Image 1 (spheres, helix red, strand yellow):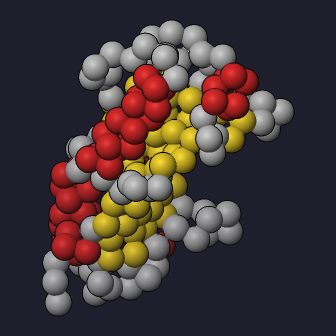
Image 2 (cartoon, rainbow, N blue to C red):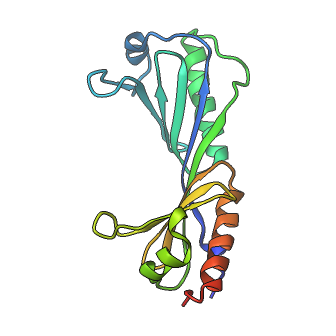
Image 3 (cartoon, rainbow, N blue to C red):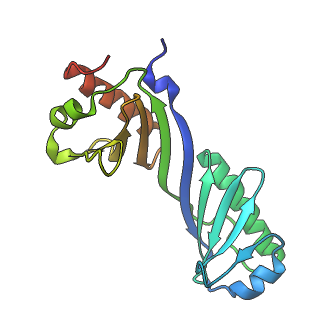
Length: 186
């Protein structure tokens, strides 16, 4: 069986950037084919790229949030497309606007069923939220790396809050070690 860290898959990368000026979203929605703007439902304009697949949430302030990308490279590529579209509409955009990764959501499989009741106690109640009547997973807040891990009885886990791609690998290796040290792995 392969190591749990080998099963890590990035599910979503969320990043933010800005073009440093206010935008007329009504006009932008008309000029940007495929843009979705419904201010009654959401204050931003939504523009989706197909290759790579991602969604940009463009706000009146000029801030842009990119979500749905599967890698940091995809974020940069999708935002590059957006920047080019804006430049094509004569909206000035810096050559390389700063892009900040806000959150990387990954999933992995520990390869063993987990006893979440025992884990809730073993991992320390101060770092754990486990209310099976409310949510079927155990929420574990890790300090290093600073991520939140959702653990499920099936052994599947979700890692959220990472800022770098290797945060998930470090978190999986650390949680496997902690669970193993408690004698609760397999």
